[in-house]
Image (cartoon, rainbow, N blue to C red; front, side, top):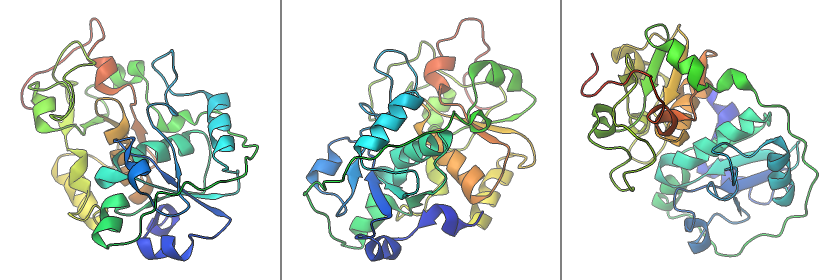
Length: 279
């Protein structure tokens, strides 16, 4: 897999704005951002309302994913290009969803909204009308998803990468500083985890660093790229970004995203937790 298989630049997007086989999808942490202006012909996915099960703390199921994509006018043979704010933070989360449910022709707009706006490219408020489709999803690909029991067993045997901020890692915060400090019972990190914040994979303009820079980032932090790797954060969205860098850009087959992340692990009874710097 090459970068061109999973990343496109803004020039490519502009050249395909009216391509009937390409669907642009915006996914933002700030779910109102799309309404204030978006790339022409892009549709919106709200990560809170559309991707989360309304009752269980879990993803929407296969049927729910099929319904969502059908309503957005996305077909199985469409090329889906995802983008969003904050270095594609939640766009990478949605990308992982698409892969989880078997949509292979999916890409990220490198740099997302940030790079698009830095280039002074057009944003519009008009919402496109797309005809509904009948989308068929596959069963979840659990080879890219880690669950809590596997994570507990991975302590000391697999490489755990905590992609949260240093303050979250050491236990000073439960969530990013700009968010409410909630959703887990205890602060800290999983023992033996290495703290490599997700944002270190991006350049100032929001684009991903080169493969060489990414390899250096992880190997210098002590990650063995030949071992099984599990990435986690607070709710699984930042770790999706790291999963993308490791699995999709560097082509490492042995990488999983622990989407339960700290909101699950930090509330479990009887599991080990560490405070402070990594030991």
